[in-house]
Image (cartoon, rainbow, N blue to C red; front, side, top):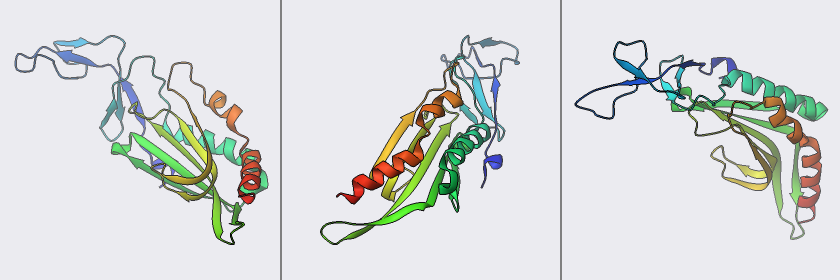
Length: 195
């Protein structure tokens, strides 16, 4: 799977209709006669027809493809030659409303020999997550780890940063203060060598 295969999302107005059987109404397109629009809400509909969510109108919609392509551009630019031979794994869940990418950098991997003689393989990972259902804001976990699972069960040393899909969200502003991955790797490697 790659970024281009991830579902796209479109914004639609959302409303409800009066139903004596269901007094709370049901979300519907506002194009149907008798539907009352809900102010300050919008529906995010995936191209596969699934409704990803109904956030407030201040929620900034960013396509998965745009988010991950820009993220990868920042990532590889900041890594320089350390990015040689990198691998990436793209996955999605919740009908495509949530997506994540895991990058692994073999040039930034090494075994640590501890004072007690044990050796542990350590790999540098960068894991980015993004969603359209409002459950995950833009997020990144990066670090030197000897164990990493995409559900964020990990062992090692890492850094986490997050954002929110507010109307003023900028991917460049989100990434710019956090793109010192090579410096993080060098510092983490030195700390782990002293263990």
